[in-house]
Length: 174
Image (cartoon, rainbow, N blue to C red; front, top):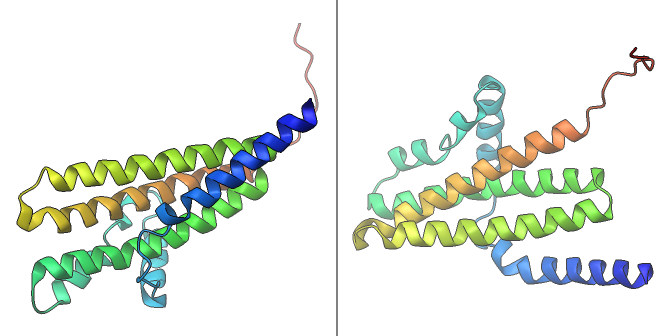
């Protein structure tokens, strides 16, 4: 019976990962630029106490430097930075996955898929509630923020899992 439960859990996890592929590949045309990767890493080092301040560190200057239609630039720049944060999220997820047992990985996979669905629905709703001329740019900005915040959250959790409490002798409490 236990073997069957493990097999079922593994099959469910594999199914969830396979069915998540389209959701996880939100920006298929965006490859991460090394300059974007470096900009975020540099910002993270400078703002170690407030890493959320780094969200937008690529997109905002990108929009300011863009010529042409500002709305198109907002979308393209948000997608560009989102790709860098999604790469960080993928790496943090892999690092966390290595530190979890099979049950923990299964739970985290389910959690991650639920988060992906939530983020997509939240940003779609947010975009649809805006004036049509601004909805695509605001939706792209929402997706950037959601992915970046999730990457920071998973990175913090994964880094915390790697730390062990200092070894201390057992204490007898009387």
